Image (cartoon, rainbow, N blue to C red; front, side, top):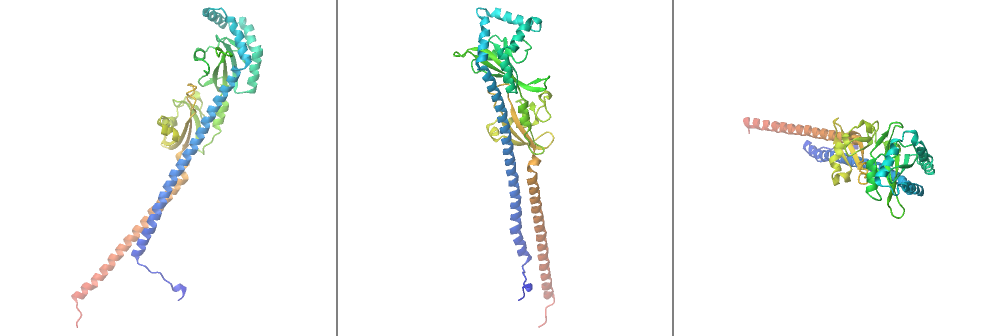
Length: 377
């Protein structure tokens, strides 16, 4: 028998059953796989953003820790210890009121020619030259000041605006809380140099006893940290930024702290930050005020416990449609295939039912005619 004469014949009912057994499970399974792909890509993107925020938060923490270490090394060098020890001798046998009056008198005349000699000594001493050398080696240190036990300045890299540190909170905290106390100020802005900085206060302790005898204060330039954060890129719509615990943006592309802009993303993840599961997950999808869904990753910089003025959180935000776009197209295609397959099967089933009904009617009609006109024997 020739090959071209081979034929495969089957009934429409059998074909319909076969198609239903094959197409329906395949299309439904394809749609399910596409949905699972959407879930997996959301998890993968979330973990990636979470990793990025953890890295950025760790960078911020390391930057602050390194700055504190730099200041602590200055406070523990022999030069500052000897300088404040010698300066403290001028207060021997003087009552506290007399010391306060003496310092206040100098502070009041600080902007007059009477204080020029003292100011020059503060800026030209061997310790002052050593401090400027340290600043040259470490550009993140903007200004360094050494003060004695009464807050009077002993040496400085730049002429101070006052004879004393003029920061009662700093002085009270460092002198009262004992050894190991470190105070970091809130974020500040230098109008002249147009940069943001922090002020770090570190106590100078007497050798052997650990008694508080003076303090080192240094202003630290935060520009290197902000530049490092801005180098991170998250796709086309993603961004990374630093916020305070009240949601105020500290650093973000095109945003400065002086704008006092509150982050919508921080409001969205506020509840997650307050739960253990939320902190461990480190990301979520949320719809913001513009109606768009965003993937938001977050990580605590871990600075607040040691430095209450630094309750920083790193946030990363990216449009969800950019994250799930390719998979969404696959889901739409799988859904379309499933709908078309079910529609085709429905049409075929309708045709089979109508065709079968028509055949039954054709069979019933001749039978009725035979009964009305019997054939003669």
